[in-house]
Length: 501
Image (cartoon, rainbow, N blue to C red; front, side, top):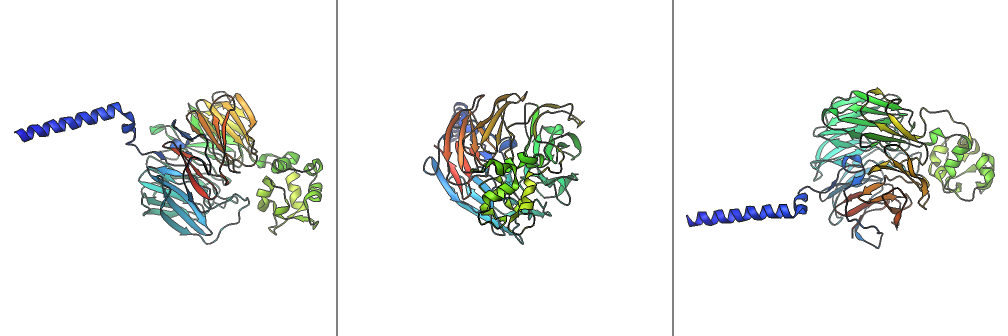
């Protein structure tokens, strides 16, 4: 009897202590859910992290928790608990990598081999662009040159499925999306151009929405809504389309968008924001200027006349330009595209195309604010506003606290009112030129913006541009940051970095 009484007293004490601990220390209760950034642009694909005490200044010698060497690749960190997943490649060997979040140690690697490494039309092309996705049980790795490989959290194979490549000359950039047991894949531009939904546990096809005549894009699918009203958004050639998540049936679409799509859509407060910029809609001198806008020392005549450009930059006067003879610019980055004959040089006739009037592509350079809830073609009924300045080339729009942030090539940032599209500020200079491939990420009162040249800006969220800090990483950045547990995770050209105060 005495033993039973003592036992009951101890049990009551334990239950009371547990109740008080949870009630008086809400952080303890919150920690039962592992920190996660489970896909490209994090939870919900919105690039918004909960308010955290992240370091506002950091770099190779400041606030570094750890750094881990990685092989080449542009995929962004995918995080669940103490695991970070990224991809890379060494030649024709594709790498699937798991890093321990607490100390940066590589826990496991898995490999697949492809027959050859493609020569892409742009210097930034890579077979390891797609960011992995995880639901805490399985991890999805996608490689356009191979297919999809799904492992468990320990790296053991669950299933894999090969797909024919989309033949994207600039390399494949879309990422897989996991939601409610479904895996969504953008297969635009391939022989069987489509949006595909697979059973995440088995790889069995649940539905496939045909998307004929689509140019290969970098647009990651976006999950909109809940329950029976849930839709999957897919941007493609000149359009944005929504499909019923349960069946793949088309629900609505908007036209008049860019023909070649790099950004991905994002939604907030009953609106969808999507669009961008591509050279496909720029002609004449403006096209040449867009290809050379980062270059220095170009004469005014060379911007107007391709022969004058050759006269200025053909150093050995052999009547053709090698890659190293081009000034540092978008034209140099896209040298393989300009070299139509694939002989290793750009001839004058090939270069003239950069100054000429191009065959028009469907669509235009624009970003749209679209109200949700429509059916069929809603271009004239649900598009609430459009923006034509400060448009991103690769970086996706960020929506945070009623504002839309756009980051443009050359180092320009724009902030729009989400409901109306009215500019709070427009094409303000950040001070670092070049490309901006990374999508900005919001963390409470701050916005993180990464320049490809290796500078990371921390901005104050608000209606005026306020640059809190400029942080040089010391290596190029193409990936989008991940932010969990007061820590900023950045994938650079050579390393995965963790920054914390």
